[in-house]
Image (cartoon, rainbow, N blue to C red; front, side, top):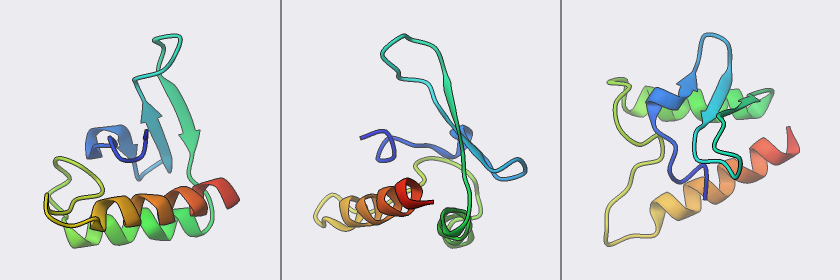
Length: 79
């Protein structure tokens, strides 16, 4: 769920880390991005270099965002 709600404001491509603000203890959590996960995030940014809005975009009538997020989750967990 956290990746599905990820916005570009929460992505630091310079230091390769993600910020999650909706946490159980209400404190931000920073997660490093390593390996292939960097390529996945860079590819998402290259698709929409505005750096605004959701990282994993799609349409309301498709499951594309869910599939992309599931794939990215696997990459981030395995990295």
